[in-house]
Length: 397
Image 1 (cartoon, one colour):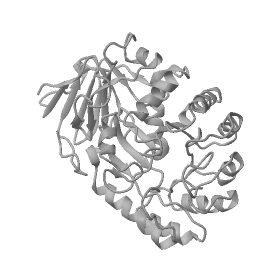
Image 2: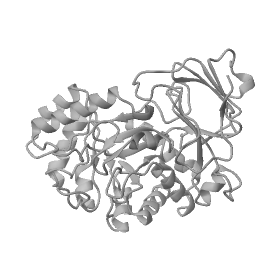
Image 3: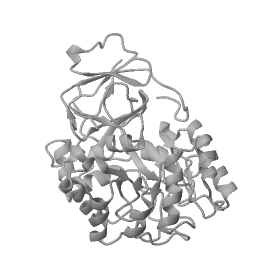
Image 4: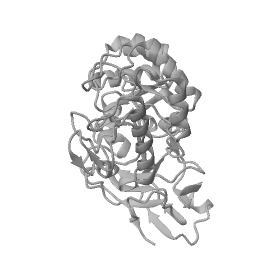
């Protein structure tokens, strides 16, 4: 195990052999015909059949024991504050705990739960820059948290977005959680953010915290943010017909979250498949929130879509990995050469009636996590949070 707080540690040569099922994260080719991965300096350097790869002299040799290997899950919608503590639930260790649910990366939708969060322009910029710097240097459980997502307020001008971008901020917090709620105002600021390389997310649905408000379909369409945040509500959803209209009329990312309306989550995912744009669907938890912290929220959302939604589970994993990586422009989320070696090893839960991991997900059972790797370094073995996996990988050398 490595120091879980180290921000830049990477592996030497690592070989993973005897993979039973390799999920790619690529929505166009979700399952790979391969049984081995070679990693060096935290990056994937080869994927294929073990007999065809250079697996000699690894510093670490992992026998996957015919379990499933997938890209580490990416939670596209979280609300961190500082360190591994959330004042929303006064809970310590929530990020490390989520890593035990297979999550290796998180994207902030705004540090909104900070007590006394500044809402003046100087203060909100300072908070975003501080959060970005802090999580760039600190990785709870090894998890990479892309933080520093300012909540935009009235009075901001283009130079404010230029200043944020120059300082390293690359995200906007949920549009609508601050004083900017009108579509035309949001559209202008979203455009300024995009011009300076900052990606935006808009709140969708009813109010979630004091100070937020209803953001309806017309505001979402007019604002044209890069990500339609929690399209299934966080918690209260727009009418299902309006959600489907957003999927059809907008070309932006469709974000489905655990802390939203489950019925509408399924409807949004099905509509994306019907419109032949499954590559737009990404997943998040929208936690911590009033409903608590969900270490297994991403796995539960995948199981929901696969079982009650009838979405092929291998595609649901792509929603939580490769789709998010491409939309968020990340270096992880896909099993391909050059990507960060952020991996989760899974098997069906013990005593699940499913024939294998994918079948167990179709039946609604979440898998057991047997190991999590970030940048080629093993961060945990058998998860303390998932049900025990039927089989787990072992480090043999």
